[in-house]
Image (cartoon, rainbow, N blue to C red; front, side, top):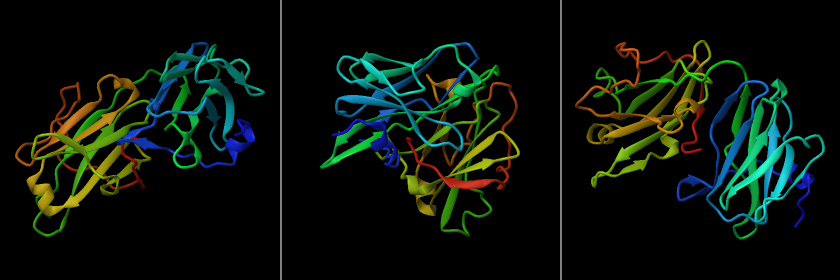
Length: 273
């Protein structure tokens, strides 16, 4: 098997999940000021073949490999143009990319990747970490929830629950919807039931779960949003028919009573990515 860069660039990015979890797990974003140190982590939840690869992708540019590191001893070989970037093996399933003395031009998406055998050999990628080099401070989102409108409950077979994150920086969030089972356990909602809407006129992202009317009326749901500003404790709202969803806002303001505007570009959300 070749380890060369040319092989990787011919393959599409393939994200792989193990028991519902991304096989190569990365944080959604990392915000740092110029001249600081950036450490981008990659946690392995799958058995990789021999090497961990790291890639950089800037806006409107092709994917470029930075280096590849031996999965056993951590030794690395850099590709041309990326000699100043280092890698570190922190544990048997934890690798990191280290960029010192950050510059604006380091702003990009960074992916870890490795070869795995699933019948045949394929290269899988982590979900990627967006490195943002700026002097701006990270600001966590305010989270609001909206139950299906009572006006349409008896008129439509499908019901929509909304979970909205707003006012954050950076504007990168990851939503997860879960349903409470009869035994009280929370299980992930299928991704085909969820869409995401970005409002270009405001720092607002809305996740919409569309489900059958009977299911909506007889089940409890939970919306969780992960953001760089709350990495250790994602914000969660429990959506109950018999109570109004609360807000995680810290400014004491009341949550909106109307659902958000439908303006913006709707795209499919890949839950747990």
